Length: 576
Image (cartoon, rainbow, N blue to C red):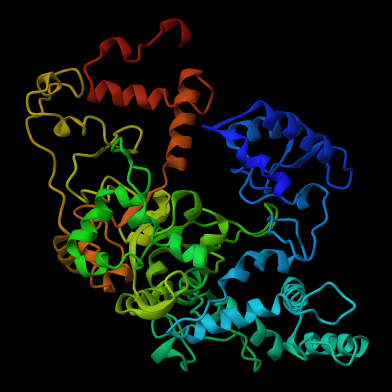
C-alpha cells in the first residue's frame, strides 16, 4: 500500500511531477498489457472524474489522469488486473459483480467505539450487517455471508424469481455446504441480514388513470373514487392494474450519519471555509439557501439537518420499436455533502418510480403523496446516531428545490408550460403574445421592462417592435402567500385558463408548511433549452431545409411586428 503513495504525493500544486508521469506510464503499460481487462483498445479510466466508471483509449486515459489525477484511495488496481487481498478491499464501481465485501470494506471503521450513548436501533442493524461482511460462509471459501446473500438476492431480482423459488435454491445450497455454514436458510433470513442497508421498499396500488392512490384511508377500496376504474385486473387473482414503487428516504439519510467519515461530510456545508473570491461553489452560497436560514433559524442552527433537492424526468425504458411507455423516476439529493460528493451516483437516492404507460400529467402531485408525507415527518425530526460525534441527535430534513426540464415543470409545479402564460416566475403578468401567421407564443421585446429606467433601448421607438416605447418597470414577483391564494382561487376555472392563469392542479408540496416561504422552489435544467436553442441557431444560420426558423411565416410575422422593410418578403415576378 505504501509503495503506491506516489499516486497522490507526487501530485504537487495541482500538477503532476516528472516522477508521477514516469510511474503513471508504467501503470498504463501494466493495464494495457492485461488482455483480460482491455476491451476494443480501452480500459476503465481511474481518474478522479471517471472513477473507473467509463472506458477510454490510452491517450484519453493519460490526458484525464494528467488533468484530474487518480481517484481517491485507488492503491490496489483491481479494475486493471490486480487481485485484491482479503484484508485489503476497495470498491471500484461498476463491473465488480460479486464484490460486496469490497463495497463495504471502508465501512468497517463505522462500528462505533465505546461511548456513553448507545446507537439507535437503525444504526445497530447497520453495524450488525457490516459485521457479516467479515464472517465467511465456511472455512473453505473466500465469500462472506453478506456478499453471498447480496448476490443471490440480486439474482432473484434480476430474473424475477419467486420467494418459493428462492427458498428452494437456498435449500439446495444448504445441502451442498458444510453443516456449520453461516448461510441464511430462507428469504426471510436473507432480508433480515440486509435490513441494515436501510432501503425499505413499498408497493402502492394506483388508479390506472392516476386519479388516486390506494393508500392510508383508501387502502381497502376496490375502485377509484373519481373515475370508477376497478383497482384490480378482471379475475379473482387480485392483480393490480398499476403499482407505484416507493423507497422511503429516512433510513437512507440516517445511514449517512452511521459512518464516521460520511457523518463529518454531512456538516461540510457549515464547517468548510467559503470561497475567498465570493463565488458560488456550493448551493449553500445561493440566495434561496441563505434566505431559508433567515426564515427558519432553529432549523439552520443544527448543521446536521439535511437540505434536499428533487430531480424529476421521464424516460422510455423499452426499445424504440416497442410500444410507447413513459416512466418517471424521482431522485433525492442531500445537499449537505461537499460538491464533489453530493452528485455521485451513490449519494443520489431513488425515491419514487412512477409507472406509465403515459406521463402522469396533472396527477403528478397525487403520486408524490407518500414522499410529501415523509417530508412532513422529517420536518418534525427523527432520532439519529452520529458516528462522528458518538451521540444521538434529532435529524430534520427539508425540501429546498426541484430540478427538471421545462415540460416536467408543468406537471411538477402545477403551472402549465404551454401558451403565452407559461412563465412560472411571473405567472400571467407578462407581455407575451401569439404570432399571427406562425401561431406560436412569442416573448419578443419583453426584455426592455427589465432594463434600467434611463437605458437608451427603452425609448428606441422602432428598434424592436414598431412604434413602441417601453417606460414600465418589470412585473412584480408574487410572494408565496399570494401565489397560494391565486392558485386556490383559479385552479379548476376552465373559462379563464390560458387567458388569466395556467394553473392545472395543486402540487402536493404545498402541504408542507414552509413551502410557501421558499425563495426558489423550482429550477429548470437548462440542458434541453441549450440544445434546442443551439439547434435553432445552427439550422437558421446554415439555412437547413425544413429546420430553419427563417421561413415564410416568420417573415410575414416580421412585417406585422417590426419596422424592418429590408427583411420583408418581396414578390418576384419571374418566379410566378
